[in-house]
Length: 303
Ligand code: FAD
Image (cartoon, rainbow, N blue to C red; front, side, top):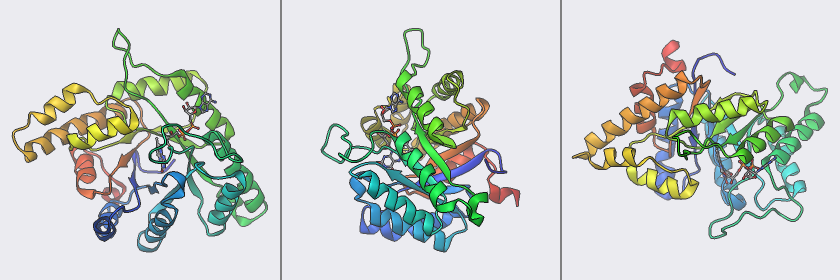
């Protein structure tokens, strides 16, 4: 992992509207100015954002000095197709990947593998390592092998005694991804440092030694938090929603969200987090304000 501690990285998604496409370059420029470790670029289900994800990766490569990480999913893809995609990306110089199973396409409740494809992200990690060996063996690139990230899920439920509940299958899945060759994990959203700490402990107990970087969202927008709850299934603490909802005006709500986010950031760092991966929702202001509120010195501050 990189030199500045904690490392800071940002997630971006391909623009979904013409207005989003218009504002994204300025967002990328503002975020790039703090010299994050990397930008990760999401990839939609069924490859529906394949083109726009590629365009955003190209934009980052062309206009910033920040490394882009390509999310890859197994959705709707045969093994052969995934092999071709990975081979193509390696041949144009991409070395950083986030390997995911992927979400089902919109309107489909269950995830179904392609008949000649993969069921889990660990198979995609293994494919990345096979293509790496095939494409890079014996070349000068051998010194800089692929960096492969995977997803991890601290959750947000508690048992009757108030202890975080960690679902065993999430730990088994992470172990399988590590065994297949993953270098580090980035977590799904969560709201309490205790969820992160308990997940990391359960992972270490299961022999998982790779870094587990917490995925953090700015907690400034209660509508977004509610939407995320229905998308991810991770419950947002009612006390947080009440605190945000009871603010008398948007400025106060924003300030309360920043303070709550800063407390979360400090909590995960106290729990030993090696870095922070900020889900920006393509908006620079709240992400940068969150880092400032938490007192995080970025790579740009240290130069
Ligand atoms: P896997 O790790 O393969 O897990 C899938 C299911 O199988 C889980 O229930 C898991 O517990 C179970 N499982 C797997 N292996 C085992 C095992 N050995 N033993 C027991 N159970 C097992 N989705 C997108 O479509 N595009 C994106 O760009 C995207 N980016 C994301 C970025 C991050 C940081 C995160 C956390 C998630 C992202 N997702 C994205 C969502 C992700 O694709 C979904 O959460 C998906 O449902 C699961 O993907 P996975 O890679 O975790 O799958």
